Image 1 (spheres, rainbow, N blue to C red):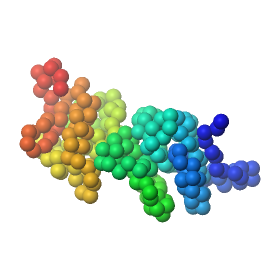
Image 2 (cartoon, rainbow, N blue to C red):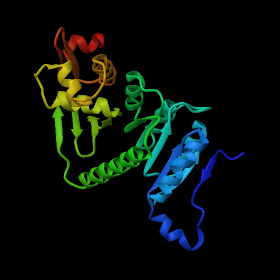
Image 3 (cartoon, helix red, strand yellow):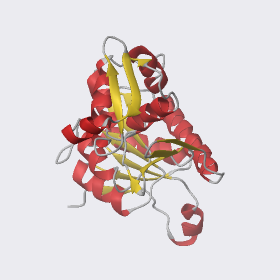
Image 4 (cartoon, helix red, strand yellow):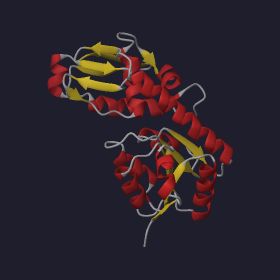
Length: 256
């Protein structure tokens, strides 16, 4: 039995027109909600496809090109977090999580695993459409920025290409989540400056974000692990915050 429903009913003579439409993948197991979202998106001129479980959704996300993915968290066969985790190393398609779970830890987990935005159920369809438009505008701006000359930030063996959001250690590309990248960039732009948790939370998660302070510690821990083989280390200044510094020789031998 097919798991995906394809909404483009008029191929044939309209195929050239549809090819220019922005494409949105809906991964949602509540069929009435999925079909309602689909109808509203079609009314706005988008081309859509629905998958009713996480495994089928991941396959569609990996094998086709999409402008945005709308992803439920609580899915049969494969949950939304796992879909994000498996998709991100392969594709950077923008993802909006749709979830009835409104806890801080659920939101942080979704964003840290590669989602770009989230919306809590029940939501007004106008808000979802506005978030889709805002995300598409942001992607257009980022595409334009990638065409300009790269601005680089370098410290010891680390280099960040800001427009491409690429982090390298020599010739090695270091895969970072969005939060890890933003945290590292702030630290590299403030060498020898100790940044408090409050400052990091404000700059990385935003002044109005309802993220607990431990989110900064958790992100630092993951980032520190990814930098463990290099010449730089994230130093904890107890009672205040963090800074980036050159790894001491004995520290490199002992590990972090």
